[in-house]
Image (cartoon, rainbow, N blue to C red; front, side):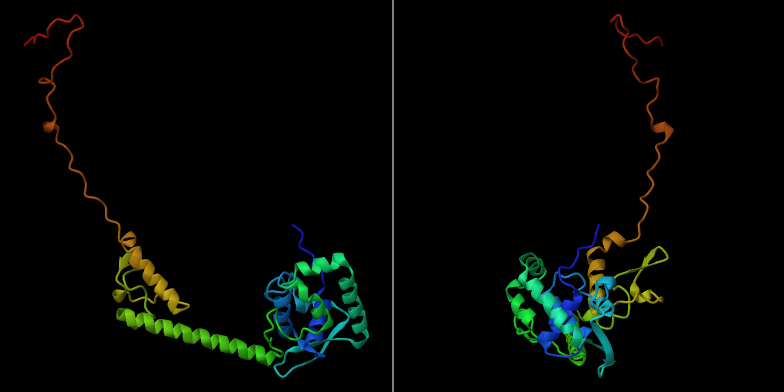
Length: 259
């Protein structure tokens, strides 16, 4: 299946991003939030670690109009448009804006097509579709990532405290295996008697998920026991052939025992 073709090139997207940020140079990590906010359907605008041949960094490195000559304070490459190429890129943006077919194609990959003129003019600014300010440097992006990571850690700790308060028997059980039973050597033994290290849990939620699984399906994972063998019937318990009545004769006469 052929890959979808982008209606607007990444170098034009970078150029209009640079115009909205009013900056001569920008790191790629700053361009991604702006592009993913305004052009979410553009191929390569999402996770920069997927679709490498379509992502923004690889496209910019192939464009002769865009160069990267220095790094910022976080050692991130700063990309900029050559002064001689800005008028050429502006002319390409004007051509898209004036052509109804090209404009319609670009609007199909936008979150808010009505702000296309503002984005192309650079009058929208460094904001998303809801006019919320976007990070303008790699340091701001790193600070936001650290803040989000710290917030996730705190929420995880609060959730862990609530669970331990509700179920105190789980206190200190996180580095161990399941509370009820763990499999080892095709046998099921209590985790308190398991001398072997349990599998690694990525988070406390994974540990609780395993606890919940073993508690709900505990009977399913009990050792299987063979049913007791059925008592074999003795030959003496069977009726004797001599005492069993024989079939009546075909002529309808009564059966007479010869003995």
